[in-house]
Image (cartoon, rainbow, N blue to C red; front, side, top):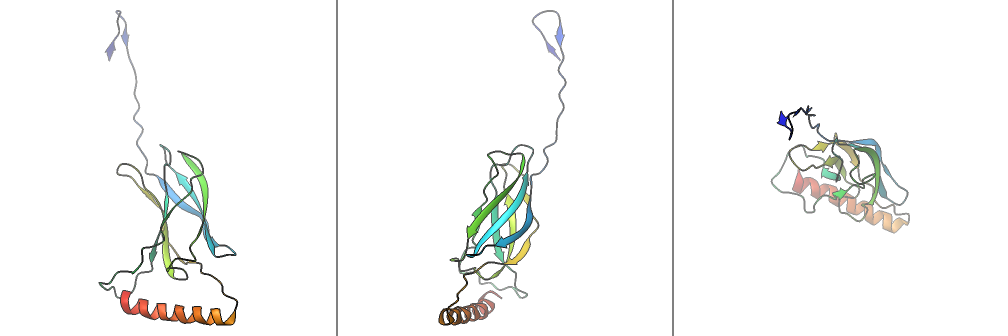
Length: 160
């Protein structure tokens, strides 16, 4: 209770609203585009407004883990927000990952919604194969197939 300047007392009622954890989820499955880009559609929600979100990738885990780590970092990137500090909305981001060494690899994708403080939002991991360039000329296609074969056998030898 607060006392006013006069003889009347002023009473205020306060209701504490618990802070719910932020949520992020894929609105639909990631879609490879015609030129190899990857389109992600996602739903965001936070009772105090979304400030940032990220797409994080990880190579599928090997059955027998080894001490050697991957040679390249995963192609993580920021997600475009529907509007600044939106409380809920649907966003979409398109990213060309065909130049990345993970192109054509089997990965687990999760949308991650960091937050200042202790609460974070994270989607359910989605297993997929990253899009890769399509080669139509026979020699280029043969070289890429050889590279993919080499990459899968060397990846198994070093990472698994």
